[in-house]
Length: 411
Image 1 (cartoon, rainbow, N blue to C red):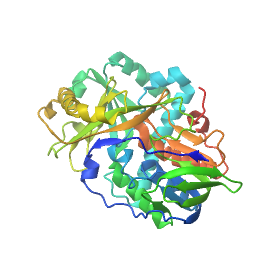
Image 2 (image 1 turned 180 degrees about the horizontal axis):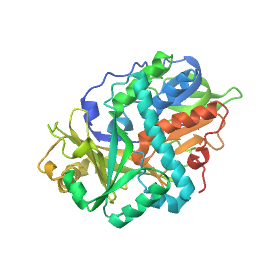
Image 3 (image 1 turned 135 degrees about the horizontal axis):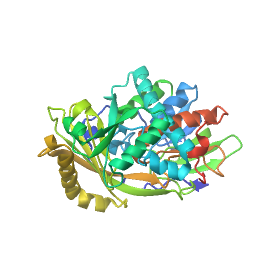
Image 4 (image 1 turned 45 degrees about the vertical axis):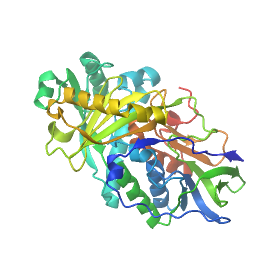
């Protein structure tokens, strides 16, 4: 018997703009004492990762039960700013140094493909989540200057990824202040809660069951699969257990590469204007970095100012000054934003790995146990990738990227 999770982590502070919109909640029920459910797959977590998994598994004909101690999407998903970038937090220059050019290129092409796959699923299911394809503007900053971005573009050219290096004058014409920037297509944006709820609705229509509030307290491995116990005194028998618990990782998942940090975000009232050309996703090569995007109703979302701590009291205490800094930085990068104010402000825990890649695959030493943990600025992109990769595992195959993202990888 192994304890899965004690729920000690306070994942978010404040109210995000997505929560304020009050999307229609998923259909759930609590577990019933003494009940025993049987299913093909039991998924722990009903956030964006669990939603992608449930949609894919049920699409493939599997039955699924999801457990979450919170209402679906009310954990880390509610704090996401949902910039669906194909680019990692780490530049290709960094990634090449860590894992080599061939693997770095493999990661880049996989992420570009997955952003497109997310759009295809949204369109196919008709999910109303303000999904829209976007360019990204990667601005020169304190970690990569104009010369570094020129080298970054050379690597992207080598990988046949088409884009442009913009100079100071080009950016000024677009309403942005920077020495240089990379302008690339292939990214997107969405409302993360409505996206996840749409995926869960599709899974539920195919027979998936969501138990909430329900805390998975322990699991047992049997010859037939796994048994998950809940705090309500019920149990779920399944062929496979999939952990999609976001940043609340159980102690038996290899986590040497993983650390927790905090990040801050804000949203303005609808601006009534487009502050820069093409509504591109704007982010910078700085530490701490800044990023900006617009919502479907014209609000500006600004995020960044990360701290190497997951302390919720610290997050709450620092929120006023973090909001002030984010607004000031945004005004320097885009003069048309000078004087805008925050209507919503929130913060949250996020996880990151030492190589900027997610942890997806089989849990070493745990038979019939898979895990899907997406980290950094590519969390939603990696969530979609996890659904594809773990679907391949369930089908008896092996995904082409399995070694790159394995939980016990050594490179």
